[in-house]
Image (cartoon, rainbow, N blue to C red; front, side, top):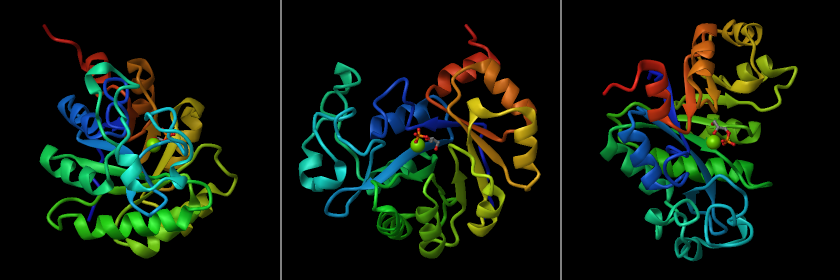
Length: 249
Ligand code: G3P
Ligand code: MG
């Protein structure tokens, strides 16, 4: 199935407006007009795929220590909302299954970023994508599967070969084009602040759409679109739409 990439993708939901990687974050991203939201996926000690960015629980929950050292039942008791704002108190850490269901209700698509805890790269992609494949409705467009981990993307190619893969980069390796070919990547996902017109041109020359993270400023967004970037990850779909189009009355 072909990929229809929207201009703005809610980053971790809508990370400026709601706690990241929660169902409320997805809801707020959708309400702000994001047609896709990006979420980070990792697995608990007992192998349950959940949404969480960090390897440790400390920053975004009331828990402590590595995600990989705690079972889902214990992670589920934590509060993943109150660190952000009192109104989100009691927000749980969602499972990937709940996120897939919420995306259907919200009528949005997902970019599932596989974010393995160290040493769990293949396992995370294998478990999360097998589950996602079972749950994903066949009448909806496929999710985009991305990762900084080449091991995770290689596993995605085995487990869910029909789903598009985004080669996500931080430090861009010299052989990035070969890696993208090997992974049969559908998109190239890059750090917006490191780019120039020339670098975008080089990525575009591979024929792949380019997605750039994380852009919250309208001038930067305009520049990137002008250079030919297809879509932007933003913490504030609302703020960026207003900056690009106007606030209205
Ligand atoms: O997928 C784009 C972006 O989310 C990558 O960086 O650290 O926010 O997951 P990070
Ligand atoms: Mg991410």
